[in-house]
Image (cartoon, rainbow, N blue to C red; front, side, top):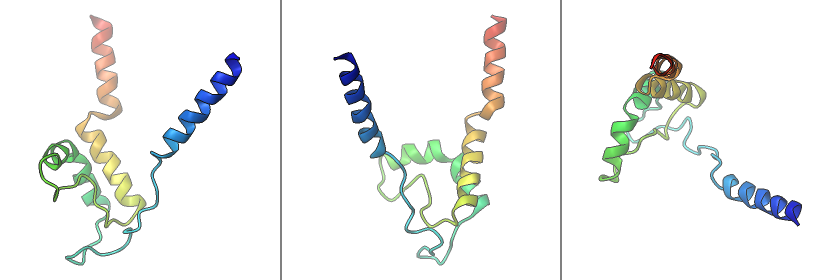
Length: 103
């Protein structure tokens, strides 16, 4: 009985989490209204301003936190670097661990 419940729980979780999986970006490598496709450097900037853009996006529908008209992998790489800059990255968590260890 316990195995059936565990199997059922795992199956339900897999179905629920598969709905959260990222899909393809249909606007990749397409130009926006201004004829631009953003790349690596704009990805860093968007990653860096994500916390602020998120707060603004709660109140304004015209603001997004991610550029859909991007060039793919390089934009995503820059976005992740920008996020790690703003949130401290691995060095920030290592510094917190050292401070906590000293206390």
